[in-house]
Image (tube, rainbow, N blue to C red):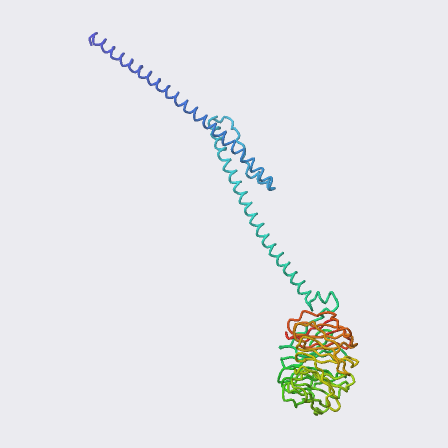
Length: 463
């Protein structure tokens, strides 16, 4: 190769080296520029991350303080140990950028954990609130039911014949109610010893009761119609009953066995009464007559036929010589029991007379009427002594106390009234009957009153 060619080749190689050096310089410059940009971007990102981490850490710390306060208030401090995130710890030799990223990650996880705790606390509060309301509802229902039951028991107890009424033992309180009849009770009567009470009812039966316990002793069946009246003989061995079947029946009081039937009335028998010696039985009827019967044989002795209306009540005087009869012709008649002669007629009532009764000394006679009054009469002269007013409906039954000082009257105004016989002053009213009072009777000792009621029951009262 000639020298000029060699020089030319060397020059070409030199240019190649120069170009390579220039390219390398440009590459290094570009790399340095890109590195600077990347470093600036990394610094900016790091700064932004630090700000974000600081904000999230501050938010997490605030939320944690709120949760801690709420848990402390609720007494659930032990939950703090479960929800408190562990603080990040630096690892030896770790890259600061990686530690920063780890801190940022922990900071972002802390709010989520705290939020979960808050939600759990809210759920717990809601569950506790719901449980409280359920318990409150149950407790309220129990308290309300208890109050209603107590109010009812007290109210029921204070009613006549209620447990509290009897417990208080105040005058004229109801002792007990005798239930068993299937129809209205029309007549009641005490035995002479006061231990037994008889009641006649629309259910066609007569029932005997133990007055001390209220226990039903036996039921006497045999009548074909409602029983309107009952009466014991003076020795207490026999019991008479009058019925709508137009008959009078005589029963053995001890066994309840039917002894005999007295037939002769042509209409319902409304009232029966024994003479004081127990040998004669009187009966009043809707056929407007009074009949006297021999109690031992059942033979009819005589008939009194001067009334113009139903004879609704009959009663013997204590000496047995006089018989009184109350009629729906608005009068009371007095008869000589031995001869059947009418002695006198007592007029004054403005309505039917439903009941008559002699005082124990035989000097006074009481009568109860549909004119809502009770009248007291002088039995010897027939003179009206006084009128007792106070009932608001028909007076269905009257009876004297054994000492003659008190008069009891039963009415269709659902009450029994007690009166001072001497003055006519009303003493007290026995309320609590669930229907009209059809009949009243006083025990031989005068301490107990029986009332036969339309509601199918008999009530015993302390008087």
